Image 1 (cartoon, rainbow, N blue to C red):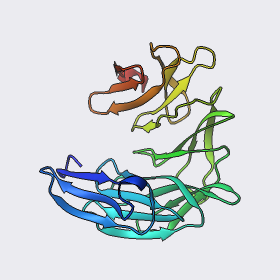
Image 2: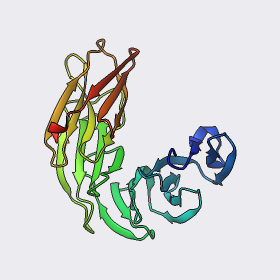
Image 3: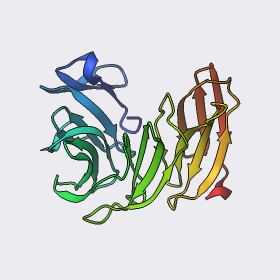
Image 4: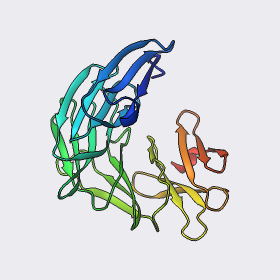
Length: 251
C-alpha cells in the first residue's frame, strides 16, 4: 500500500491456513494479522488503497478498512469464485459465486446490504469493478472459448450490456485489467497460437489489437498498465518483457 507505506502479505490457502494476511510497515515490522478459521480464496484491494475485500470457503465475504479492521462480513449461499471492491467513501463489493443452479452475481453496498443481483449468460472466472462508472466487467475461459462481458452496475437486477465471445479456449488464462478508460484482455490466435492484447472501451468497441512477437506456443504470462504514464507492460513465458505506450487518441 504505497500511499500508506504498508505492505499486505497475502497468505493464500497454502501459506498459512489460519491467517488471511499480515500487515507490515515498510521496515518489515508486523503491525497486524487477520485470523481466519477457513481457507481463504481471494483478496482484492481497492485502487485508492482504502478498502480490503476477501472471501473464504463456504461463501464468506469480508470488507475491511485499510488498517485491517473489519467493516462487515456476510455469508452467501454458494462458493465464491472471485470478488472485487471499489474505491471511494462508499465502497461496493461485487462477488461472483457458484450455486447448485449455476453462477450468480451479487453487489453489496458499504454497509453490507444487497444492492444488485444478476446471472452471467456464460461461464465466468474473474470480476472487476470499473473505477469510474461502477460497471462490472467479467471474464471467463472454457471449452466454448473466451468470454468478456459488461454488466450495468447500478440497478437492482443486473443485466449484461454487451457480451464478446472469443474463438477458442486458451491454455493459460491471464487476468483481465480494467482502467478508468478501457478494458485489457488477452487473446490467442486459434491457428498460430500467437498472443494478442485487446483493448475495449466500455461500449464493447475494440480500441486496439496489440500483436505480441513471441515464439510459437508461448503464453502471455502477465500484463499491467501504468495509469499515469499510459504504459502497458506485457510478460510472456519465453523470457520476454515488452512495453507499449498507449495513445490517448484511442479514448
